[in-house]
Every structure is written in structure tokens, then in C-alpha cells.
Length: 247
Image (tube, rainbow, N blue to C red; front, side, top):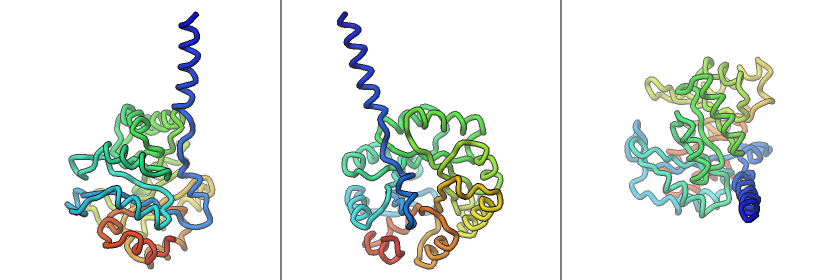
């Protein structure tokens, strides 16, 4: 029957659609710190960061400088981002792309898949345990990777009860927006204490501006860093990446 043939062909199409995406974990397994370079026009705390916003130019600079992956802000109201920017970046690079978004509903995870993301951000502080586990299940189903972001020891202990593989430690305090790199140091030490460090990839986020910051994080032994504002403000992102010692 023709219907049977159509269904069989559709099964092949769906299998291709759900094929493994570009892996950030493979990059983080490198012996050196991997850079997740961010494309971000603005933020609620700093306002407009890059008035001459050209995401395609920024992307090419990141690629040339050896970035391991790209982070794209898609929130429109507070960060002046969009899903269209991520779609555009997907056409221009083979690097894994993180969708940086405030995900609070399963629909957003599915949306991330269809707009071309390889990785999604799940922020522990805005999700219940049930939501976090559910979203991680959906990611596994879609073969998306997830960075589960923590800001505190309480967040970390919750996340360690899930099957999260990549943990992002955000050095920014959500209450007053102050930034302290010691947050990464403290939570990394806690992971070691709990015997969990080798079970997770660790990414430091926010407040990374100088080579001294990178040297500090290298001593801690993080697998990757996510840098946005510092690179977006730089006259030459590639030169800044070299200055930081990341290529």
C-alpha cells in the first residue's frame, strides 16, 4: 500500500531529523579550557553593550580565534536577542551553538531544537526539581545537550540529584548582580569534596575579563568558560581572546 511506503519514508526522515547534533561535551573533553563565546547585544544590568551589532562578523571573529562553541542570547525584551539570530548563526557555522534563554516550559526546549540549537541552558534557580528532570529528559530524547546553571550551593546540591552532565557556575549574584569568581572556586571545591567533580563538565560563567581571571580558573580546573560582555565590547574579539590566553 502506498500509505505504508509513505510511513516508512517518514520514519527515515524523522530519524535524520533526530540525528546527533554538534557536541559541546566533546569540546569540553579537551586538555585545554574551551571557550564558549557569546553573541549578545544588550543586558538588563548593563544596557546596550554593542551598538554596532553585527552577529555574523562577531561569529567569524570567534571562529578564527578558535572558540569551541557559540552562545546566542535569544531573549528579545531584556537582551535584544532573537531566535532569528540563532537561525542565522546556524547557517554560518559548524560549531555547537548554545541557546541562551530563560527556559521555563517544555515548548521552549522543542523550539530550541527546531531553530538549530545544539545545547540549551537550564537555570536551576528558576526551575523546580520536577521541571529540571523533565527538561533533561526531553533533551535526551532530542539529542540536545544541556548546560545546567547553578548560582549557589543549594542549586548545586539539587542539580547533583539529576542526570546533568554539564554544570555552568554563574558568578553573578542574582539578587544584586555583583560578580565574584570565587563562586566558581567554592562550588568546584564542593564538587571535589562530594566526589562528583569527575562526573561533570564544568563551565565558569560571568565576570571573566582578564588573563588573571583565566589563570585563576585554570588553577581551579574548569573545563570551559562562557564569555560575553568582555568579547562583545572588545574592538577586536580575536585579539581579546588571544590576550586572555584562550587560543
